[in-house]
Length: 78
Image 1 (cartoon, rainbow, N blue to C red):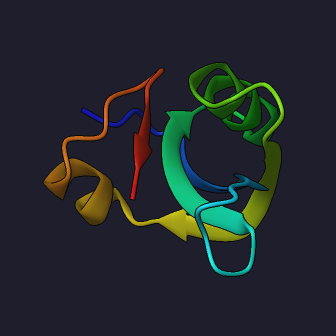
Image 2: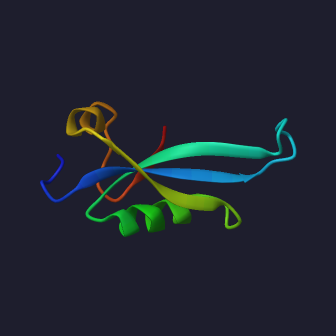
């Protein structure tokens, strides 16, 4: 259940990957947290240390977060 003070933030992650045509791989994660800073910190824990992690302005609606079973305190790749 999503609490009123929680938001499903979207975080962009990219890193160098020589296997990719342009040399970079980009993924997006959703993190259900009380602040954008918590979302970024949570995603940083889940990805490679050399990855670039940045908050986007996008958010998931509560309906979408519930539909994908996004849990508070966890990050999920989209």
